Structures are given as structure tokens and as C-alpha cells.
Amino acid sequence: MTAKLFAAIAFALAAPSLCFAQSAADIAKARDEVWTMEKKIYTYEQRNLGGSYYYDISAEGYLGWVYGTPKPFRKAKSPPALLATPTKEVITPEFTDFSLEDNTAILYYTTHRTMLRDGTPVDQHFPNIHVFIRKGNSWKLLASMSRLEPPKAN
Image (cartoon, rainbow, N blue to C red; front, side):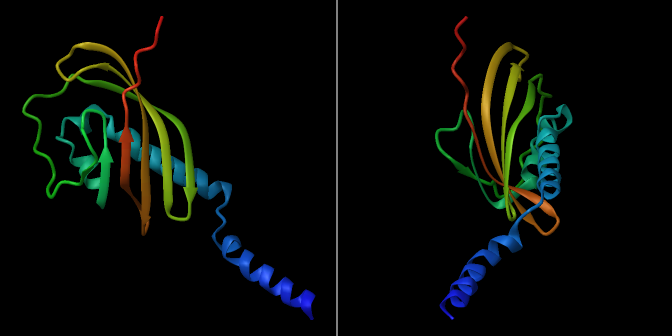
């Protein structure tokens, strides 16, 4: 009787994790969906539309802390205005790693900025983390963090 009770308890404890286990295909699909969304942030077209794409894919509870801001900030109440002058900034994102648990995805990537908005050449590298949540069939950006790496010694 005791062995059956222990077996039942063990199954009851393991069953929730069995139900939520995600297949390699599910993880790969989520990774591809999130990475595709992420790369679109860095396209010339999106950055010159005043950031509305980033605003649109952000969850209502979005909290970000990006390079150049003194502390984390929340999602604005309305989309940003269109840029008065198109940016010359050049940023290239590169995938690093990805984690998925249920409806939460964490994306690690780097960006390499080679030109500032005004056209000044630079060589800047940023490690980034973005946290996405799945709402129905779509992903929303919930949190982000980006930091400038110190210049590399030659």
C-alpha cells in the first residue's frame, strides 16, 4: 500500500512538468518567431518610422533599461513621433542564445553599431537581453536590457 501511495505522489508531482514539456520543434519555432521579430527592430525602415514597431510589439507592462538611460523605463502611453531627419545609424544584430519556458522566451543577442545617427563612424558592441511573453498566438516584448561593452584593447 505504501509503495502505491509513493508512486501516486511521485506521478502527481511529475505530471505537471510532463504536461508542459516543450518539444525541440516547439522551442525552435518560438526561437525563430522571436528572433525574426527582434531583427526587424534593427531594419532601416523600422528605425526611421519613429520606433512604432518597437512600441507595437511591446507588452503593456514593458520595462526596459537600454544604453543611455539612467534607469529602467516603462512603455510610453502613446507611440513615439516620426523622426524629423532619417537616421544614418547602422546596427547589426547577432543571435547568441535562447531559452523558452511555457509562454516566456528569453533572447540573448549582441549588436554591433558601426555608425551613429548623425553618420559618425563608431565600433560599439552591446550585449542585449529581451524577454518575450506569448499572448495567444503572438509574442510581446515584456522586458529588455542593453549595455555598451568597453572598447577592446588592441
